[in-house]
Image (cartoon, rainbow, N blue to C red):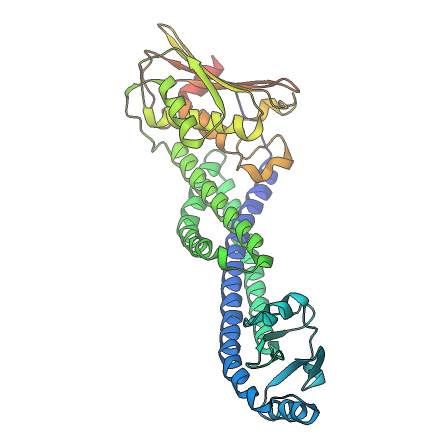
Length: 421
């Protein structure tokens, strides 16, 4: 199936946008991860310091018992003169040593303290940390209130710097992406191959660092506050998808450059399908003929994995894979009962970065079927897609039993000649 022609100007814009998106996601992920880690570290340090100070203060407060009117005033004045702001709860009466540091004590916090435990809270409407406990020998509760304005001010400055840096990276990526697109798209034939290879090569090292940073964040995600845990999980998922995109870009660039070689061995497609479904826990019903096919097992696995993943991600159950073989051809058919593909999209399913449903853009890169087709050509075969809206989609891989396997660019050249004939 031949790809549709796209005007160079539109391609230039698309490639520039793609470069900006990749750079923006990478820089944004690193900036967000760094901010979350620094924020958590600063807040944890503030809590640790305050909690370690509360215990001796509770013991020192015993000297003011019993807390009658004068003793209570002396206790509050003593703490305020030492630079500590406290809130005293005695006989259901709440008194602050400084009205400016009198946050509302939540029922959950007071219940924890009443049970004899040291507890803390950060009221949503303030930038204060409240750590309290019960004064030994009484039912009175003492809360130390610490302002975290300095911490939040530092975090605001860090956030502003990171945002400015991210914007600078995006702007630089736009300029570099436009320059690379212009330089790469000028040649009439080789621009797409060179650009893909350049982008994949340049992004491989920073993405590796990004994945390492995301791994560190993943190890600490359970310790993050509830409010930031979900954004951190989404960030980690985006990094994983970004790594997958780079890997696919690297693969498609190697295929374009003709640097991919085939190594033939005997493989059973039926057994390979079952192994893939089991490894990924895909709900696929598999049956057919056991065939000893002489082909490249790694490339066949890549093609079959793409077809199965496409059915699982974009189709619906029941999903079925069958293998049929005769003296000349081995055919693998993967079908699903999903929504199908509209007729206007069907001719372009093998176009790179083309996605029939924009709502599914987060599920993949749009390179899966293109990679499957290129690998099938290296094996001397081809992939075809048939679909009907509301009736599901069928992907068919046809491989010759006796045809010589192709190498590198000869695969694309022979496919072109076959299409013209």
